[in-house]
Image 1 (cartoon, rainbow, N blue to C red):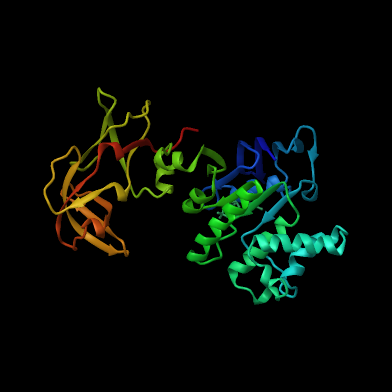
Image 2 (cartoon, rainbow, N blue to C red):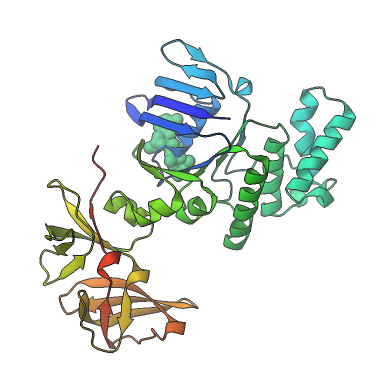
Length: 365
Ligand SMILES: Nc1ncnc2c1ncn2[C@@H]1O[C@H](COP(=O)(O)OP(=O)(O)OP(=O)(O)O)[C@@H](O)[C@H]1O
Ligand SMILES: [Mg+2]
């Protein structure tokens, strides 16, 4: 089932929560809306589901125009065949797991047998078949989240929308359910809109990610593409790049570039071309791309410095290194590669020019 969102705008009073949003989601595609708190993810979802009336635009779900401001069309939620799973999974505690999932089917006056068949089918799908008769209040958080998911799936929605459905769970369970969710989505070929502010969740679940900032989509693409070629420094930062600094960028003759950081005797070389225009630029380097060594280094990008902080993380150590220029860099050392140093140690920090990105601070409006 395809979804097409055209020129969508949503205002709360004078406040524009969604500004002219255009997005096409393909049949069977998992599209993740990613962005920081308040950027308009839930609002976009509520417009799709019919829980919010947009101020302008058009929404088409499976060739049916469900909203069109110009033609005065606004189908209610129950006419859109959209399933929703929310962050706060309101399962009914006084009912069993089976009853929770069967609830909406019973309203459709299906035969008892058919209800039993469909409920059993989805409970098996989410791994809760053994819990059918258990009271819903006697479940763990992860199990309750599955009940919420089963309740949506049992209605056989053409589109499934999930708004931060895993955020109440602990990290390990979240990792596991994330994988299971993706499996179910692929197995059923469900068109899925998934909202999160967690980039790892987005990377794991998405066919494509739409990155929202201030009610606008600033970049859209596959997880790998988004990770490797963020369109701006602020997107890179949001996706976990920890070394982001204002810089003066200079283009080299051979398609390379370099950047200096004002106030510091610090130059970094990049093998990438800088985007044209005279915008504020920032240099971006991932902590894991920085190498740190006790031996002196001579490379295009090699700086001497001192370890200020060494945070043990199991397999890795997170370092803050103060360079002789006064700049502080965040670096990730891998213990197995022998990149282990103590606070106060003199070290050399290097990075390949191919891993340095010089990006505009923000995407142009
Ligand atoms: N009913 C409302 N009235 C007024 N402003 C609202 C209303 N609902 C949301 N907003 C505002 O609209 C903006 C977008 O809200 P939205 O809930 O879509 O954000 P979000 O991306 O889902 O954030 P989060 O990650 O925190 O859930 C926010 O600035 C929010 O304060
Ligand atoms: Mg939200």
